Image (cartoon, rainbow, N blue to C red; front, side, top):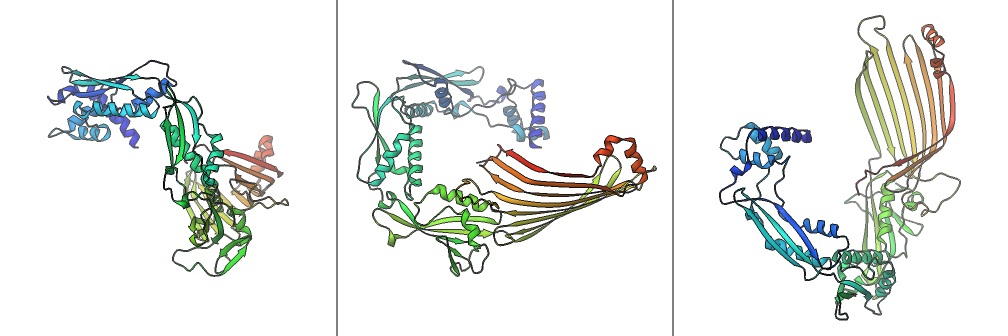
Length: 533
């Protein structure tokens, strides 16, 4: 709705502007409207990705001038009109929708912009660049723009990328990972690339157990003293006085799971030991043997945030929990100068076990049928204490044909009952390792449904459907559904002579009402590229 109002506002603005009104007459005498800036680049050598560099420099230019529409400035015009003592409803409305504060020459600081442009060029390897700004003031038009002329020198290019050597284990881990670095000989000095390199190294170290490491502990130093031309060596070092706990790997000593965690309750009673994990629950809420496959964290395993993310996602995908919280606690008494120890706690807050849903609708159709419909839904989560979900939905609809004529009073009744039982695991004669499906564990779904439709003075129609199969998410975009068993039975009954006569006159329609039993398998592939991330 807001978008439509904006379009209307623009149309009205264009109409009023065509009637009169140059905004320049509203500009104060001691001011000039700022109309923008332009960059020209000169260099003594070819620049790779020149257009990309220029676009990045243009993004630095501040402030942005007032927008224009078909050569006019409706936003600025209605801002000025709304400042009058009695602006009127239309001017106030349009100013609220599209009005803009004026940008004057006094709002522009070319010298500061010069510094920003130089800084951005240095970050991209163009040291000692020259930036000169020129203000183009057009007093009669009450306008001013700025031109920035940039002289870009030859950039500094990388010759060698080296890591400082040290006996600490962390240096060996970093050194082994440098083979995968995108930083290579001949590339231009690029501060953004160096920041990404620090984050890449940090992510790799985290996956090797370095729980307390931070990318801020890494520094780069460039050395140009070895070369006469614009080349440099890049050295990667650790900052001085980095805490010891930040440069040692951590292992998981224990993995504690709380299948029914409630804030403020005692969570230390009734421990069950299963698969080298500790399950804390006063009574069995979720059977450990069914919960364990979702947990990728193991005792003796090095800390790895990817395992934590995958575990949290898999647990959330069960459908029985509203919150999944995984945290780590350092055990200082067991840590050494070369290895840290962590305790892992997984807190699972369940959804309400049962829920009811009701929906009432009133339906009116073009053929004169009208009436109410009622849908009821029941959900039972964690039905057998293994994350199973039972969904039962029932539908009832009644329609009667209103109006005059011979068909008035005809009615239709529709009844439906559908039951789904979902097991959050793969029910199969083949046992799969829990790491087989890295993103999520497949679910097994069984469905049984009944539908009944009766039309007065015509027929009644009944159908039964049943399915058994699997559904799983291959990644955040792709979902698979595979039903090796899919059955459907349809039977026409209680036909009137009037309806039978209709079928006799239309063989094609008669075939569509034949008794049918369909058995087969179905597969569906769903790709959703609209997911946010």
